[in-house]
Image (cartoon, rainbow, N blue to C red; front, side):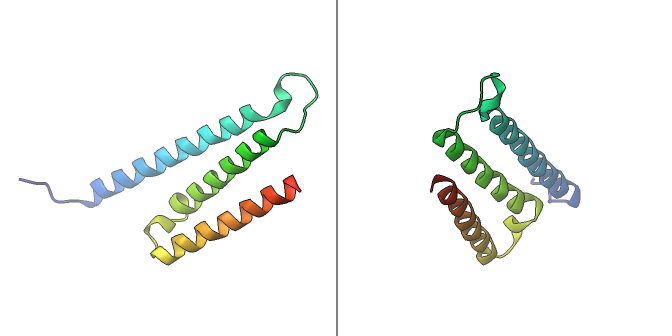
Length: 100
């Protein structure tokens, strides 16, 4: 016999999802910090691969924040696609401006 879904079980799942998203965001922040070139004591040297990695991580973080903390994952599909397109244009422009 299956158990009916209750408000408690739905809330527990939502809290778990938010917790996993928060842990992923924290891990991405640590990875971005680790990629920064100023930790060795040597003068920092610009690096295109590191910059691209940090920009991609920034895109992923923004998408996760919009999806999980602004509740776009449960919003209409057009809103999710619109925010994804906006993020793609924004982060691509940032990367192009840096590389130019």
